[in-house]
Figure 1: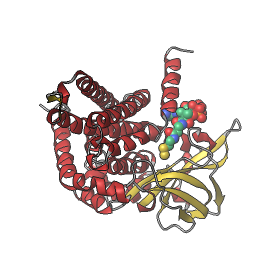
Figure 2 (figure 1 turned 90 degrees about the vertical axis):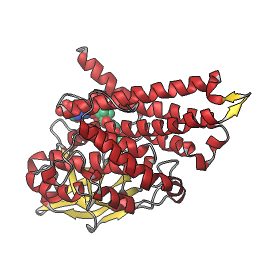
Figure 3 (figure 1 turned 30 degrees about the vertical axis):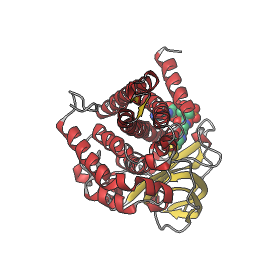
Length: 391
Ligand code: COS
């Protein structure tokens, strides 16, 4: 049995793991170093993932997906991250941030219109929430959508949109008025690529996740038809909650990326420690190194269990927001520890590009920031505790 196998896993979980592992080893791993160096978005790999059915894993078959569950999806994300964090991030942004809200909150007409194309991989999806002045404080949104005849006139700027220019649809939030009580009324919309007024900033140059396409979006007098209000007219003002629910699921994916990166670091550190000798023995038998490797393995196992538990809860319709935040928090910090340790075990080699663990370390840092910083996860967990304890 593999270390990442669990007795309670179902056959389709093992199947998807083997399928993604094979694809990652054959098609992705040989290019990961070069893609990081060139910052090139691998559109062809997305095409191959589409052919293999990886772009709609948790979406029902009648909507073009593979009809599997969240656990199968996070296993796929983890396996990709094990060899290339950027590609895993692209898949995660497409599935749990870009496609999921249309599937979960769209009207029947909206689901039929957009989901099959996305789940079958004919289009790539994206999500835009963060703004120049609204990151952790997501209700600080300043983008506005004003009713304009039958539709909406949208103006504003969104930051850090993953899959950016490659996305055929982007879900985003905008202020559509003032809610009772004086708060901003925030609604969610879908915009299609090519809509006049949708403009892209330059591709961001980043510390890690370098082949993932991250863009600023500008909405300049962008007109959207009434049918692009996610969930239809009765969902006006429900955009913030829809995005919070989407992020609950997205946080499980970021946890899965972290597990994959940590496992990738372990995959490289253990064989190196067996083959490299110092003081007449394999360095893996030296106390300092063996303790590091043991700690890495514990981190990977614990993080994986937390991520899978959050996914299983989601699949069973149980509350999972706290568990998703815990999994994301623990896994992302474990990912940093494990990738840091892998560099240390490999020493000078670890600090060079070709041994890959330095890339994993750079990629892992994003997981402590994206889809809610570690500080936000602690806030969500603490608020949940305070509710549970009734104060
Ligand atoms: N699921 C469903 N509803 C939620 C929710 C969730 N996970 N989190 C909050 N809500 C609801 C609340 O229940 C509340 O509803 P009512 O107005 O009916 O009471 C409403 O949303 C506002 O909630 P709250 O007052 O807690 O909102 P805050 O402004 O205090 O912000 C945090 C809450 C900090 C948790 C939120 O802003 C957040 O997650 N920030 C991080 C954003 C993020 O992850 N950005 C990265 C994007 S990656 S592109």
